[in-house]
Length: 515
Image 1 (tube, rainbow, N blue to C red):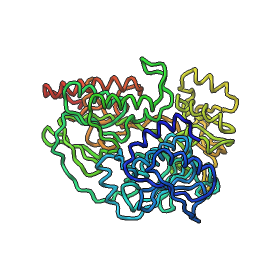
Image 2: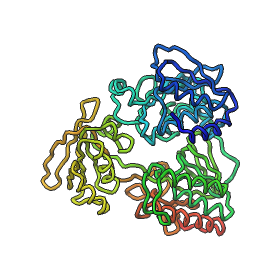
Image 3: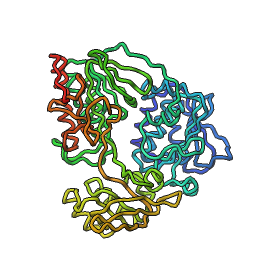
Image 4: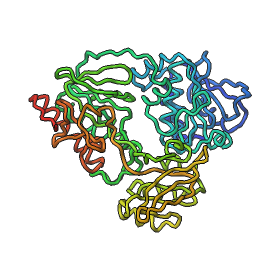
């Protein structure tokens, strides 16, 4: 099932296995057995254990440490994006270190209640592996945690009974926990309810610069700062930020085309080459100052100290804020057409938003669904003309402009339509729909500094021409700021400028706030 090139690469990778790992199989279907036999044959420290479990089907299997109960299960062959999830689980159980921040690991190990987790995935979903791999790692760390990946395509009746219309869909002890893309600190918060005891500890390792955010702006500022000889730590919930989830990038100067994952890997390699200290999967809860020292409070209870701070936390998808939206998130309301589009094959959906992201989503969905209605608040679309032309030539896309979304309708388990208002006539009408994809722009990730730094009415951090904020020693760059035009190239330039401005501040001690 695996080509020879893949097998050769895996054999080299599995050479790092130190401890015996067992693959526990439960059925006699030949396809999964053939797949797992190829994996087993790559290293003699990978063993087969054949069991009969009535509560699991023949496509289910587990990976575990020898001598321990199984805690990581797969229901379905983890191909596509999920293949890496299986490889990582084998490596981690085999003794390879987990790439999870030590502060997060400490909190996970302190969980003392039994957690049975299930994640429904699509093998085409690029967001699902991050959730699966996180929960698998939690199960490696803590014997109280069990996690099962379920390929939704193999279990349509189970998907129907759980009323799943979006992935990843995570269940805790049989009850819905969350749906869609969630970062590691937020996953942990949901698992613990924020109740995990945390001992606050102030780090004695004083930094010159702490950069909060791992997107293009944050990475650029960290690189420019460390090349000036400063002591730099970069904190990121996810390296790459929103860029990592971008498929096609065609307007980044110096390259005609790249993808978000490829650009993210380039950013990672640049940080490693310049020896920037990076802490991933950590969440900053708040900032304050004591004298000239900035204190950065992490969700793990740690308090980091630095002479300066750069905030480059970017932005997230903006929600409609209408009745029904939160009620039907993951039940017909979605933000990612790539991940959730396949659930609406042959159905009727709407895309709310007439910018580039909205039109691109409509075009993507047109190839999957029966029909797409694009709804735009303004009287004209904002997308690039080339995208508009392509959309208008697509026969199963309908365009409605001058439309205000009023309410999302559902039957208690899934979306059935939306109510909208014609802004010209003021009349309200109903659209019968199976799904609604929201693509209305970005909301700055600035909540943790609200009330501490000056922000505008959109929540963007106010900065001056040198990216200085209203608090001395605190700088900001990229999409989280009031700098116009949210583009990767602009964020990189603003980040570079910020790194230079931080060096100037630390060298001269001069800071003129925007207030």
